[in-house]
Length: 452
Image (tube, rainbow, N blue to C red; front, top):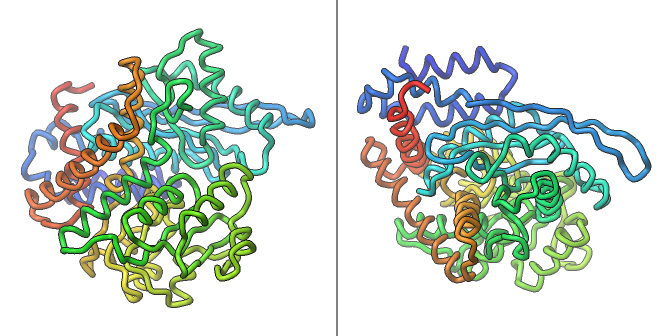
């Protein structure tokens, strides 16, 4: 049995209930097989065994009181996975589905994503099973303050710098940062995704969606195509989806879909800037549901309880490019087959691990241009890294400067993926290239430190 197989089997035995983490380990480690022969020093130092074990796992109680005086208790997490190349860096997710397995999967993926950005950031992730949906601002504030009462002792600008993720936007970051400042009496760059008024970076909200679009454009160039004129399917309706819609539209593509946890909108006329402005106001200000879009725009269709990928499969909707930008495992093998049947040639993942292992297998069998989330959506954490740099320098860059740096980083990640895939015998395989390129930098640093 190979070293890789032994490590995967050990994770399956030890963490059998953590299915998302096992899936992430399986997806990454299988593609690292070509590194075993080329790097015997990794085998000797047990790098493969060590990289799947977090440095530490922090779990804590989060008690809070709602507007009616009722006491609630949630569970908080921070997994500090690997800081070989820099302070732990990764988002906080507030969602009822959050558990240790999901946070470990996200933190594990973050190691390689952060490495690919070329910025000095390690991998971590955190969150809570708290659901901000439908809560008042005061409820959310009291929860965030209670969450930070424990988290503050584990983070710092050179130790661990959390950001936002699902359920954690500007409102939540503001509440947590305000409370951190109160406790520590220190205006440090300890969170990213902050408001511009108190240390945030221009373009940070747009960065993940813009970056995923830039990466897709680079992939399409390799086959002599461009986003202009393409029909594009996007899932989700949060920051990533919104700004992917914006950038795809700017580049001449036609976006026909978005979704939330209740259902999917299909607008085959295309989502124009005016329609996007309505969607942003609906989701970011009124915190409404996407079905209201179909009530305003009568030619759009709303599919209750269906994902974008369900609708494409069932309705036979033609698309050229797909940006899954909602959540993990939203695309399965059947969805993948339907996408290919309906003309999809390029998939750029805006979410973390939105395609399951069956879907990835089908993409690769059909030679689809496929960018895994750790490469395609790295623009978000890259711009968080740029926010950290601006905080350290006590200055702010212009929007144009940040966008230029983001484009350079995404082009660099794309080239790193291609170079690594070719160097390790899998030319053009972005999944293998992304995993190997991200892994090598971290593994070499771990070897340099000795057994720690």
